[in-house]
Length: 499
Image (cartoon, rainbow, N blue to C red; front, side, top):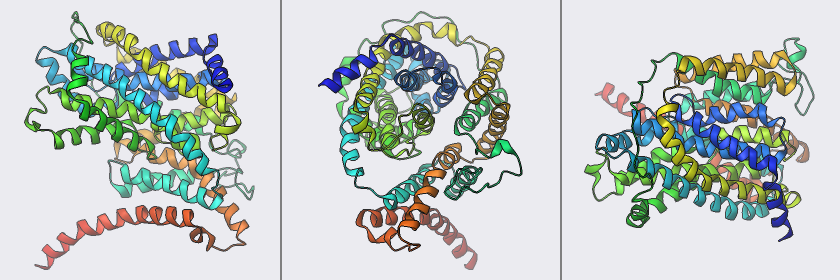
């Protein structure tokens, strides 16, 4: 109880409450602007967290990401342009409802069920994380190596692009993680005689470049979205309680799918939304209504994407393995603030963990009143010119990256990774796999070398321990999976050629 009270004292500190409020407003605005993703909103906050207390810094990441995921539904409903990738799965359904003259109902569903999904996701984090932390205390470097490797492989399996391209992107990230002298041997690698590269490629500038600068480049290469006509909305939450009672199965299924996908490294809210919308249509008694403005798919997918946000923190807090691109950024902030991810975080800094749970709950609760205000202001926000917003974002990226280390080379790093991220996305290579490689490369290598030193160079202990052997089997299976898929696809072609 004393730990719980201490956590509330942390959250109720004026700087933390102000950080929650301002980051909530910021997340709502950025998420509602077409072309600006929740990941980009989070990446732009990183330089700001440099000057905040640890709890306030984490509060900004949590609140802004949850708000941005919801507010991405607003332009999807009103303009048929998803504000974030997580909104793309059900944009056509929401827009069809708007065309039927029910924009209030569509936006109300997105708001209400996103908030409920976020609450259920937080409960899963509260329940799962401590139990898994107790289990993880028995892990050695052998298990941690396979777990980190498994995280890399999961990112390639859940990628919507070609698994081969996902593996290539992940390997590029691992190569980037090799730069510098921060390796078990302390040997300079890939520095090309440049002193700026001795410390390696900084994770935060790389993430800001990949997500924020690349997003700006992508947005400037497509036409300006249409202007939204001014209109007055009716009651936003009218009928939501009735829908909650009418579709409990869809809501529960969306929450469960979101929680499961959130725990998978590299999956994220957009994957959860796509899977849940497909499941809603597959198990619906009236699948012919989908695409005509039917609430069933909106409810399931809306609950799923926000539920995945909280559960994505489970592998991040326990093992330092990002659940999605947002938690990849959050891990960098956690290390920067001395809250090193790992099972001991739950014992040595239990009050900070309770504070994190409380912030998740508060973020999803205040989403409802602030979301209603945002929906009513949407006509003003969506009139903002892209040509005025994008230069400001680029400036923030440059200033923020310089401020993190007072080094001009970090600004060059942001620009370089912006170009890399843009080219990768344009050619179908998932940036999330690259980011996982960068974030986890050092972890994989360190645990591998440490394990070899402990076993005197023998590989047998990697497969001899029960948990390690199980993780090894799953990881190798996922590694072989893309090859098996490729061979399976080639088989009909070979048969047809022989015939």
